Image (cartoon, rainbow, N blue to C red; front, top):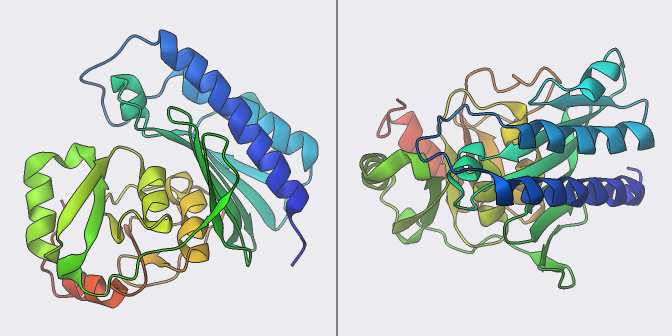
Length: 277
């Protein structure tokens, strides 16, 4: 595999540039307390254009995939490259709209369907988690030097902490606790943050139980978990590959864990102890 240092440098520069613009818009954004789950903002579109312009300029042959319909996405269409950049300009836009800080920006690089580089940036707290295939997962917190991260060593569900969506509310939280028997939960709006939490060893598992998950919700965080020593599959235990349509999951949720509790979680799902809404 190529070194990917140039790809990483461009990716991190682009994600920070987008983060600066998102944060600027965030500061003047009027809070929407009842923001819907599918809300899209001017900040989403601005963030995506900043990222895609930089990626397309640096790697003009590569394919691009993003959540929003923006000019550079259209301009780059038609490539048949095995390399594909997948971008979520604001993951957890509901957190952005509610102004609680729970949102991230995500960039993943896929080659022949497999993620080889990914970054999740949380502009509100200036925390960047990134990984390159074969080189581990690292976190840069408020500009401090990169620190390598590892998943937890927890090996039983009863001692595990689960990352879940804040939109689950108390009823959804109780349903997950009852089904999996985990010790506790940590809630946030962003799937990218939840995957980064597992990769940083802050939680033990994340069940992405939304059956409408798209590639950009998962791709960047996917490699963070794997490079930190964890495991990520679809909810039926199958590998996840990315085809470039944005709909590679085909209506399946995801399961990301520290690896040690993965089979126990899959057993809960296989036995029907947790029912998807």
